[in-house]
Structures are given as structure tokens and as C-alpha cells.
Image 1 (cartoon, rainbow, N blue to C red):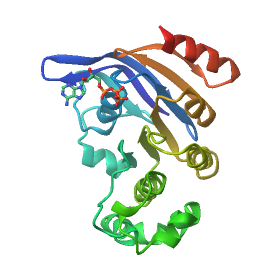
Image 2: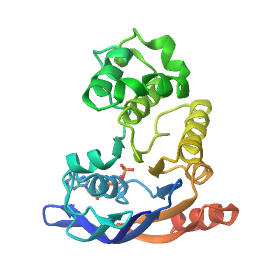
Image 3: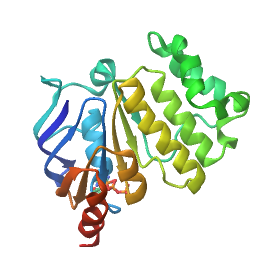
Image 4: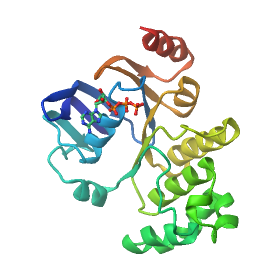
Length: 230
Ligand SMILES: Nc1ncnc2c1ncn2[C@@H]1O[C@H](COP(=O)(O)OP(=O)(O)OP(=O)(O)O)[C@@H](O)[C@H]1O
């Protein structure tokens, strides 16, 4: 289990997260819901080690990883898909994949498996990433992260700026990742439908505090909407 306990972090003198508790179950998906500025990206960056925790703990299968560098966390199996479908725009899809595949042990061997998950990318291998649609770029971003062979995939607003039909496809891939290949997923979202369809657990974040959390069952939709409306 991946666990955050009383996690605090922020920027300069400003504390943004004021003691966040959260779990990502084994083989499971946890989504963090919240409006713009609630602290979702700050939370994910602290999980990745891109921002230091000021206090509190991050543990993974019992190991305290709170003070590990981002690099050490990646080596333990964390992978990061940042907001905004980031990739190298002037490189082709193939080059974008190979840059990651070659930098990680076993990356090349995972290429076929990852392309089987995102077959749309196979037809776009020679196209520059900068010319792909938002949905295609998002698939490329997730594929790049999967080439590292992660045990926990961290995604920041994967549905942002993507047309609804593709959002559903990405949602299905994320659910499949957790249930079929046992990859844990932690994702931040603003869209309640997407967030809860894909998730086993959810937490609603408001001004850096968890104001609602629980199983992502049918009752969660109303509970999450109510918490977001406050
Ligand atoms: N680099 C930074 N320096 C200072 N303050 C920051 C920085 N990045 C974010 N903040 C502030 O931290 C707070 C939380 O921002 P954060 O980006 O974590 O929210 P979010 O929930 O991810 O929002 P969004 O959905 O808009 O990405 C906001 O008040 C924001 O202004």
C-alpha cells in the first residue's frame, strides 16, 4: 500500500498542503479531486519528490520514502505523467518513446506491450509529437511513463483538454492497468465522472485539506459533488 500521513508541503513561505492523509491500495486507483488551486499538483509533486515534504510521512509497502530524491523514487517504481500532455514536440512519437525506453533497464522490452495498450500510437510513430492531438499526446505521455515499468503511476489531470470519446478510452486504460497488470495509480482530476469511474478510492481536496474521502462507489458521486460545491 502507498500511504500519505499528515503530509505538509508548499512553496517558500506558503504552506499549500496542510496535513494530507491518503492511501493508494495495492492493484488500485486513487483519485484526488479538487478545483483549480486546491493543491492537487502540489500533492503529486510532493509524492514524486519534486517538492520536499515539510512534515508528515510517505510510505510504500512499509518503507519510509519521504526523504528520498525524485530519482530514487523513480528507481523504486514511481512514474510521473505531468499535466498538459508533455513530450518533446520536435521529436517523433517513436523518438519520444525510445528516449525513455533506452534510459530505463528493460524499457525496450516493454515497447511492444505498451504499444499494444495504445495501438493508435503505432500509426503515428513517424509523426512529430508537436503535431499530435491532445488525446494522442496524452496517450504518448502515459506510454512513456509505462516504459519505465512503474509500480505506481502518478497522473496529473489526464482528461484535461481532451475530447470526451478519448477521455473514456484513457479511463478504460487506467482501470485496466490497475486490474490487469497490478500497477497502482494515483491521479488528480477535476472531472467527477472520470475520477470516480476510474477509481477504487477517492479524496476531495480543498485549500490543501482532504474534506471528503472514501470508496469510489455509487454514493461517492453525490458525496464528492457536495464536497466540491462547498
Ligand atoms: N511554483 C509555485 N510557487 C508558489 N505557489 C504556487 C506554485 N505552484 C502552485 N502554487 C500555489 O499553490 C496552490 C495550489 O496549486 P496547485 O497547482 O497545487 O493546485 P491544483 O489543484 O493542481 O490546481 P490546477 O487544477 O489549477 O492545476 C495555489 O494557490 C497556487 O497558486
